[in-house]
Image (tube, rainbow, N blue to C red; front, side, top):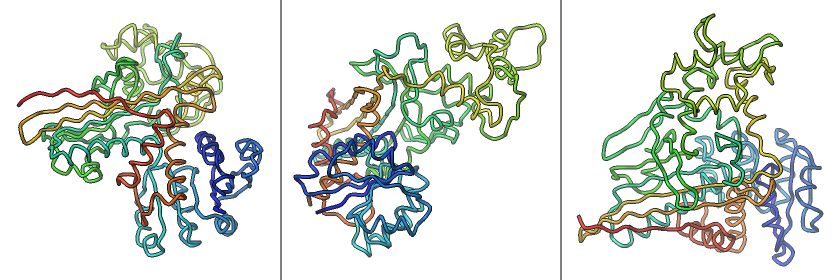
Length: 447
């Protein structure tokens, strides 16, 4: 009997838990789901006989260790900054470890201990990071095996609204994951390489310098550059590549409108505001505009930022920024207050459906001088408020990797990302069987 311990019963855990419980009894497995609130865990388990709910204070490392001792492997679904804490306890107790989050420097520092104890630690096995790595490496390894030189790699991903839920929302967007990450996105300078030239985009220019990314099924998107594309040359084995860009997708027109909030300073997280309790939304945006007793707020925005058009003004008005209604919160950074406003307007309703889109673009050259352009696209739509596209694409890859490891189909040890064929090949196959797959288009030309 194998025991899986999942710590954290948040948004994406439902899909993960359901997948692992589905065949738990026939595969002789038990699942412990631990959360701050055991009732939340119980609800996620749905009374399944192979599941047990526990309450846990993750900062009580002694009790955490007692719980970890009961498992064969640990799945950390807690906030990313807590993963090293769970990882250290897992190493101490000699347990394997899985997470969907980025591998932090603190996690990498544990690599020696992990290897020494003969443990398997897998991070970045969700959507982005996760499916992006695995699908990219499948394409890259295939092209390399055919003797082709990869000269361009672009990869974009976004979590958005499904088209049927976009009506009456000019932004065509709502929060499908962590609102904080959306509000603070791009505040570090983005870096990538294009045609052999290093490029850097500072925050104040990021949402103006976007690429058009088109999906046959769902239309056009703005792609803005992620913070660090350069490090993925080594991760993906593309050290000499002339062009590599990783980015995030929003609906076409979103970035130009979001840029207004950036330029005005509403996304600033560097200072705290303590506003009177009669401060309205209109007063909030006006506080970032020049003093002018003659012109209206709407006019002042267009005088300060002359490129702002009627479509952008419609989006700002839809958020309620010109309304004389009270702010949701009065203390915090501008970004905190903006987040409070957006969490009301961009909150998913029970009838809303989300969508995840991902696209890789590769260009290769063969020894015979044949140039190939590959466009590999994935579009996943949510089913309901629990089985969202985001929850499926984060939870299922992790569940698949855990299942394959327990089946003995992944024999690796040490600290890993899902970039080795032994991991990505069976995981992608299992994902495809569950409706998560890519469609590819090829264009060939002679140099």
